[in-house]
Length: 76
Image (cartoon, rainbow, N blue to C red):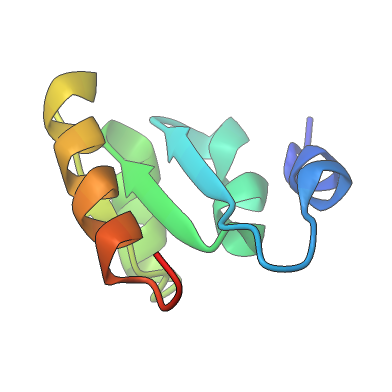
């Protein structure tokens, strides 16, 4: 099941769409997200498709990385 339409449904002008995933079922979503956190099989697939992502082992570290990215955005 492609999760890409879910990304499209929540996207609004100016929003940053973030995807977290670990498997092939998350690839469609990762293709459409602005920022991807990937682990396991999804990280391998992102490498194969040259999709930029941040690796993550747990959500605490991913949250810190996301907070840093949000601070870097213009208007933040």
